[in-house]
Image (cartoon, rainbow, N blue to C red; front, side):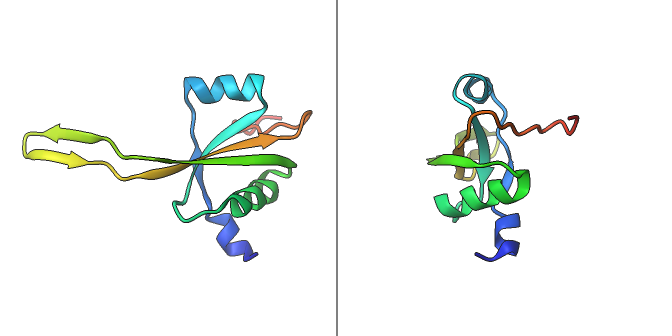
Length: 98
């Protein structure tokens, strides 16, 4: 795999109430990813960037919300979300303090 492509697959961690519960209970981390990313690319990118072993990846396409403004209706962009299961005993720390 192209290492340059892997560096651009993950956009940002998706922090929400659900993702926090998954991190605590199921050892999963949620990321916003590039819409063209595959499961294999996401797995390799997480292993490369965070030095952890990935057990599995689940991917879902999120539809953009329709919003009304003073100028009519508009639509936010569609995006892709990846649930990454990390092997037991390993952790990804986004705060940087170890």
